[in-house]
Length: 364
Image (cartoon, rainbow, N blue to C red; front, side, top):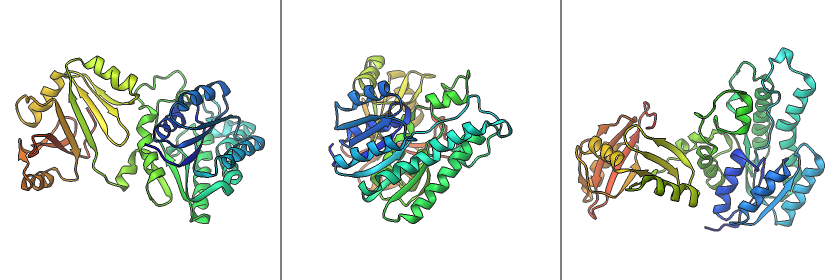
């Protein structure tokens, strides 16, 4: 896929910024990326340049001279369709209570998390095309009073209000302030020094929501990245592959095709869910596939490939598809992983699982 879109991403050498840049590079966006660490940024540039045009400029967005460099880069590529203000700092780690917070350090946090992203937008505003998208990365700490998060959280609260006013003052742009959720990143580890954060999801889970904001016509406002799809319902297509050599197949899709792992389960056989952009691919060994068959239809099928399609109402969808030639293979069932499922077979012989996420859904 190729586009003529150009984007500036700050904090793009690691974490959410880098994962987003990878997704956009795959779709042909021209990238201007920046981060403070020159070595890590150059490694990112080399990787991304294999797929698209990339301009990498190392520097600190709190520095007006660096923001001027970014402006010249935006002018050189003919303007910007989007800006993602992702760069920011946590502050001290562990984080002090507000009454013990060094005020000079608090000023640094506000300078990095509030003033600098506004400075970026002020610097590049004349390069922003009509309909430009502004994504300002925020946090649930902006709206929840977590003890010990007074510095970072209050800076993000200020950033959110700044974003809201920016949206009101610039109706020709789409301005989004986006909470990406907890992620397994270096900053999150710094926020919890010495703790195991391996249960947090990788940044890849937040990117699909950002992509919707960048490519669709949602109203300016505050969004949670992992809930954006709730505002723009589209069927979620999941391709399920039953394989004989699970680890080799997983390695092919994950390591060679670069698809990020969203979930994995190994209680009954082996299964893993991979992000494939606008869809997902699920790889299951024979034991895992047979267990799903048992739950949905009561017996093991011979299907090597099965589609799984999210629908708002499984029973209604099944009745509709049956009217158009599909065969109903089993009753609607509530699964152990919190979905409501029904197996059908299309007139052409394709196995399809219709699934509806329920409030009790918690994955597999």
